[in-house]
Amino acid sequence: MGYENHGSFRLEEKEKNKLSNYQTRIRDMIFLTETWSSREQGAGYSGIEGATSWKMLSA
Image 1 (spheres, rainbow, N blue to C red):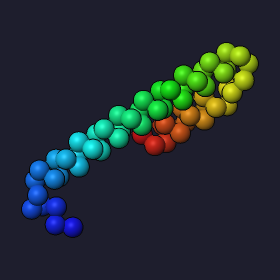
Image 2 (cartoon, helix red, strand yellow; image 1 turned 180 degrees about the horizontal axis):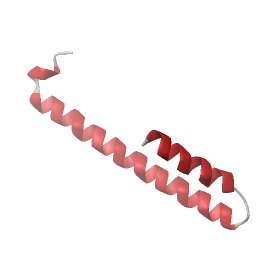
Image 3 (cartoon, rainbow, N blue to C red; image 1 turned 120 degrees about the horizontal axis):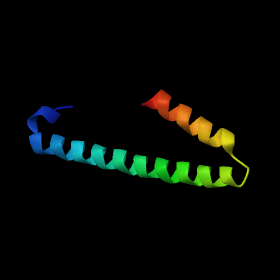
């Protein structure tokens, strides 16, 4: 691997990971919002339950 020699590179990787985590969180929020609105129309209740339990499992 040899990353130890490149401190700045490691920092860059950390920043990239932080950004992708942030993007994933936004995507989850959009997904949950869409699922909630479809639930209000009488559909997709299992979707919000599934998403919630999946978040707990992956947290």
